[in-house]
Image (cartoon, rainbow, N blue to C red; front, side, top):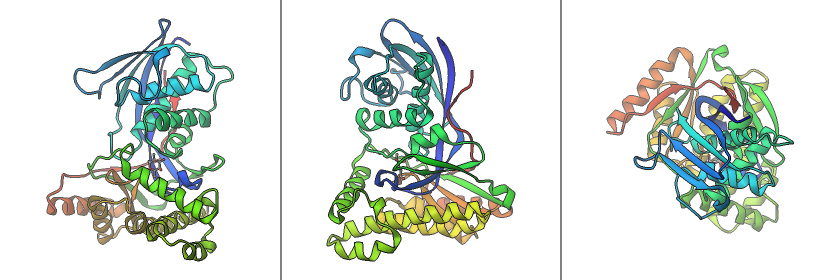
Length: 372
Ligand code: GAF
């Protein structure tokens, strides 16, 4: 194939935050907001990248494929697609030049994985443009996109976002074990239960290549080493009190408590969904927010305000979603009350003189695919 158009979605994480780089459990779903790549092969060894959203004056960047290497060339959004081409070649695939033009309906820095969507759509487009044989499957494309994000773009993230963008299916939550990438598609249709899931973008932007995310990750790894386990995933909820008693550092104790309880919350939410008890998910979301706010310390005043205003207006549960330090929150509410809950959140932001948040209904959409 010499040309085509592909898309990959952003994601909302229903539950399972900061567990993926601890080999843990996550339960995201894909959004109907996507990055679209229009691509064609080039035979001159040039990777030409263009984006409607790129800063003025640098809408097109041409890079020589043979020169691609981490830390070499311009920094910025082009690291994601350039890093994917580099990672595919590092994995032994024969890939040359390409022209890729990106358009996006995903807000950047909103905690909805626009960078993972950019990486996954690039991996899929290049894989099909070059007819890789055997064709990498979707989890393999997610691994490639994650390698690009970690090694090339310098963001030390886990694999949840790339797996969500690649592997989610419409109407389902992706229950993923990030240790072995085993996954299960679990039906999630709040409307069928008289409920609605609102997505609230606080408009506070963030980036995971900044230090706070990496420090949480390093803290978790240090705690796992202190406990003598390969990853915090290996501490079960029953073992938590004994594990906490063995850690002298209060910061490590907080990180461990969040990760262990959060893995258990993923199990509680997926069990509730499997038994059709969607209402029961609400309080678990709120527990997750409290843990991220007080123990993992990745929330911010705007995310806390969404949660408190939504709960005060009668929502069943609410929490920040994604890496934190800004970005978006989710709110589970009775569908009949969704308008009033959204209005209460907007009013709380106006009273605090904050930029008006963007509130959307979030329904699970499908993963990455070719669209023409
Ligand atoms: C970001 C990262 F990219 C994910 O890998 C994950 O760690 C998430 O933060 C927190 O759950 O989205």
